[in-house]
Length: 258
Image (cartoon, rainbow, N blue to C red; front, side):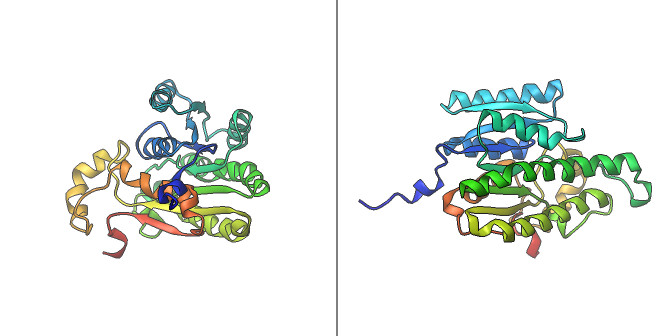
């Protein structure tokens, strides 16, 4: 009997940590990985609202026969990444790390304050770096691991009001390439998944005023949805994507080439 091509997408006995997984893109990716058989660590920033959202994701996974647990950690705090890594690893060794959590604080470049700069750096870069430091070496030791960073078109097409956010996304892409070269021969892949204009709660107000004009520049003719990221993430996180390493994969309806 011929092997089933879809078996390479299965994630049975793998554990995935998805940061910022309580809603929107992170939630969609977490649910897709759980559907493929992975245990899911659902990270949220720790507020009561976020904890409730994360528990809802856990419940949805469990109702489908999967295994999941919510982990709260504010990435703006010192040592947040190391603390989250320790908590999740005590539950289950992490095979898949999806770095989705980030914040953007739009403002003109000449109005950026030290406080707002430092917060974006902490959440978007410092804590993710700590997670990479803690979780990639064990993947290397087990000779299997997947890291997917969630980027943005802001990496290369920065919005004038998002200088810090766009800069952190560009740095994250650089890190993905760097780590892909270091670990690509050890069964660990590192890739960047770059969403285009995805309609989420974060940008709904902006899209209400800019969305129609933006759609005219997207060959697909529509804004994206969080679920549009799920298939690409599953490919990069599974054995089906084992020979994909150091890639910056746009999921943007063709906007990057328009």
